[in-house]
Image (cartoon, rainbow, N blue to C red; front, side, top):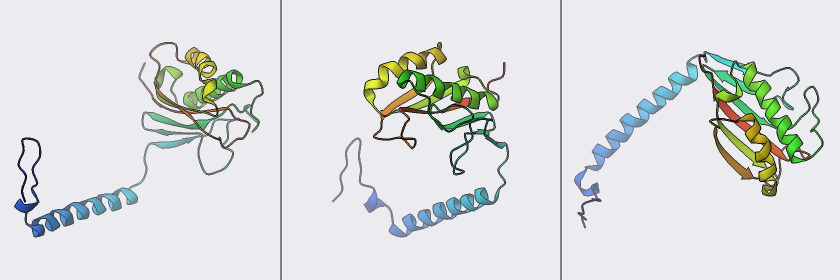
Length: 173
């Protein structure tokens, strides 16, 4: 049965199944070839950024990656630089230290906090949102980045109340 409406049409009866298979074969051959070419191509313009004092807890990730004019900062918490200890003092103090750590990472790649385009904030308790936000706006006074804030049941560091990840684009000044 064929349906014809202004917005929808069942085209399956109009196309030969061998034509569909040939189209799929061409598409997947091109996709596999492109994937193989990408896998064998050297990565250029990619730099690992592990600023002094902010070394990752485990070797499974980098603090940040600079790729061309972009910087991608891993989720950061309020660790005291040079240690793996979370600062004491609650959500405001941890948010400030977290954003200072992000600032260090972003600057190590040649950008500033004004270059940050996107942030994702993970909160252990959404009731901390207002206190986190009060500190957050101090770091992004004008043209703040796009942002999402999520409540999570836990963070990898049990003492952490907040974690923030972000990306920035290095802009010519």
